Amino acid sequence: MKKYIPIMVFFVCGIIFSMVADNYWLDIMVFALWYAYLCVTWNIIGGFGGQFTFAHPVFVAIGGYTSSLLFIHLGLSPWLGMFAGMVLAALLAILLGWINYRRRLPHLTYALITLAITFVAIIVLRSSHFLGGSEGIFLPRGNDPLTFRFFNKQVYFWIILAATCLVLVFVTWFSRSMTGFKLTALRDNEDAAAMLGIDQLKMVATYSAISAALGAFGGTFYAQYLFVIDPTVAGSHLAVEIILFTAIGGMGTVWGPVLGPLAMVVLIRYLNAEFVNISGLGQVVYGVIIIVVLVVLKDGVVSWGGKRLAHQTSKLKMREKRQ
Image (cartoon, rainbow, N blue to C red; front, side):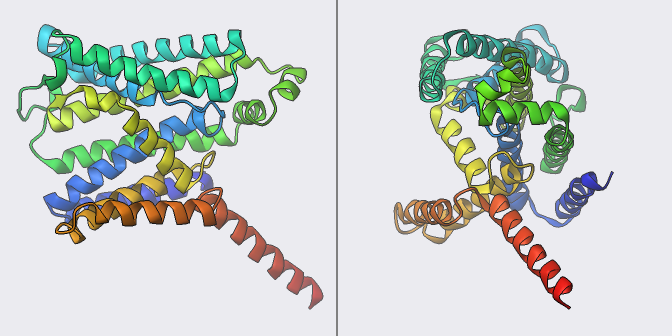
């Protein structure tokens, strides 16, 4: 139970923040938590599983478009339609995992294939009249909890906060379970894992599907929050941001994918506001900060902090023994 205490603290802090923040800060933190949610879900297969994929935005788009289309054309609540999107995203992820396994693709080749899929997805979405073309699908505004529509940003904050915390609970359990150890074993050495009898196809397909399905919910949330879903959500830029934020926080860790986006989304908003009169300077400063962090803290903030803490703890123990 102790391992879940940080998540409880995080949730309580989020609730307190939502009670005192204005709409401006609520909007910033809704997007920060949305990125954190996507990073945590990508990290399941990208960080713990070592499957470096750019396809996560495609799963996000599948979730957003599926629930939106079902709501507009069939009147099905996005609370239910999101499950259809999650299933479709999971099926695509399983297909990609199967192809990767059968063809024994090098990691770089698989990454490039998933990157190409984002390009194909954008072309399909922009060229399809049924899918709204370049403008996307606009959802009717309203305040109906049964159809996942609210005028109060606070409610959306609570939803994405709760979703992020629930995924963190799963990842915390998973990272310390035998299944999690098997997946990280596959990441570190596939041949050695196979010799130990670990079923690579089953492991990769299962957790690719879980990662994709959870990511699809992020698409439904995005559509309901902005009342629109458009092709840009499937773009490679979102994949780069997800991977970048996760790397800054720490890939293959529980809290890295949360701390990375929370810090970077707030930072880019601040820099854009601070250097609003100097075109592009905010982006330059942002880029320099990213480079410095990744060079100095190679494995991310959380991994670096964990190593420093372990080092300090060992030094204290040594001192106690000497005394």
